[in-house]
Amino acid sequence: MSPAPHDHFRQHLLALKSELSATEATARDAAKPVELDQTSVGRLSRMDAMQGQAMAMAVQQRRALSLRKIDAALARIESGDYGLCSHCDEAINPRRLDVDPTTTLCIACAEKSEA
Figure 1 (spheres, rainbow, N blue to C red):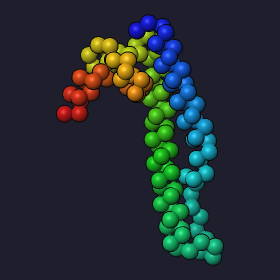
Figure 2 (figure 1 turned 60 degrees about the vertical axis):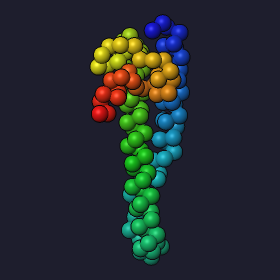
Figure 3 (figure 1 turned 60 degrees about the horizontal axis):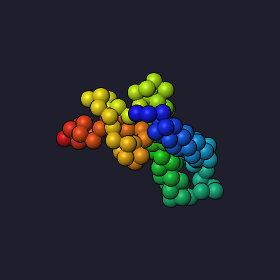
Figure 4 (figure 1 turned 30 degrees about the vertical axis):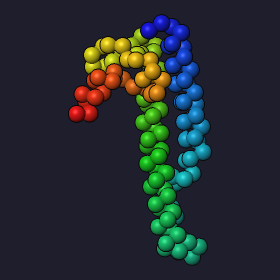
């Protein structure tokens, strides 16, 4: 893959990383432990808060996974392996990379791994 597409994907990945990092900083409060204070919060309200906390933690885990995938894709760009399938070493279609710039599999290998 020529340097120009690498720059396009690098910029796309850096923008995604910046967006996720900004969201992570503002979402930390939602994942904080729910305090047990029966005088100010009723049982159902506390259960709702705990459910909200669990959902926030799940979102935080998905965000962390996405950030790791982005960092791995940026490392592949630096090493020159970006855009190559990790299974068959064939080029990954740039349109596929536009949809998910962190993908490591060509469509044929991705379909095989799902089966």
